[in-house]
Image (tube, one colour):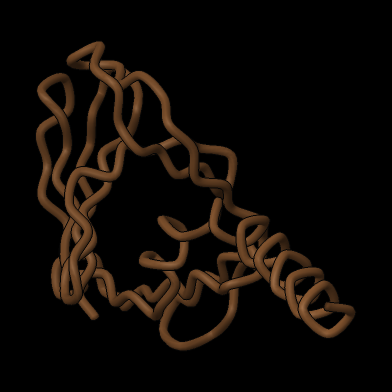
Length: 132
């Protein structure tokens, strides 16, 4: 009986650690290295920027410990915290997953194994597309 109690106690102890981390399940899917492909301006400021047109490459790395590291031409230019949470999108007033980093909040429009598209959560609504 004592062994059974110890087994249950150990199970619940480890399960509680896991569930504390389970709140980061969604943020775990953004954890990776993302290469900037292009940015498009919103309706009030239409533009298209790519590494070729702007003259530099950009890469962001979302780490598992809540940091985002930004590189320009493979030189680290920023290392800052990021946060993922549910929130209301500016353009459609619907609930979305939002990511906040470098002082800006973005709607996560698309996130899968190969693509990350974020949209500025403001009236401009510029869109940035990253690939793995």
